[in-house]
Amino acid sequence: MADNLRPVLEYRGVSYKIDGRWILRDVSLTVNEGETVVLLGRSGAGKTTMLKLANALLRPSAGEVIFESKPVAEWDPIRLRRRIGYVIQDVGLFPHWTVERNVGVVPSLEGWPPERVAQRVSELLQQVGLPGVEFGRRHPRHLSGGQRQRVGVARALAADPPLLLLDEPFGAVDPITRVELQRQFIELRQSFRKAAVFVTHDVREALAVGTRLALMVDGRIDVEGTPEEFLAAETPEARAFRGCLSENWSEHDQRPVE
Image (cartoon, rainbow, N blue to C red; front, side):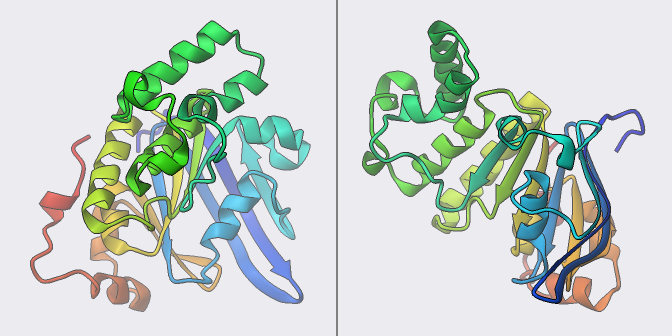
């Protein structure tokens, strides 16, 4: 990444311990504007803990997390979380609210005028392929899994946050829809220039959506670099994850066009 990009999120020597067990150990990582850093690793590697430290659901046992040049510990938690878009696997939409109301919830809480909220919701639904005229008045139960996930992405972007946190966001949909959502996420990232931290245990997904990868093992970063650097890394864990790629996998087919 270019040296002049603004850091949005920084982990500085961060460790986290619970019940005497270290979940993270001395992790340092910077996420700049416009880039997607993928946290790749097996279950229990510490990936989701990293996200929870970013939005103050957890506090580090050592080290410091910095968001927009200010320690997370100094942020008001509510204000912090409204500055961060969050997308999870099961979406978490309010079931009795319409799609429009779900997408517009954070701007409304932030005091945006109703007409501005309506315009923002309409624009985002159009961009995620769910035009408001057709989908805005529906409830989540009337959407497919992929459509609900698109609504979740639109909601995360609604208040124009500088940072997105995505915790295995496409893991619960079928393979074809998953690829479509990955491609749409890449397009949205290029349009909005958001910093993003994307958690996955799927190496194909990591290579498809990431501008940088951080491979985690037992609470530490084993390899950090571009997808090309990850593909060249020779640590045992990097080789193990590359072994999951099928023989007919093509780097050219999977990488996004920037």
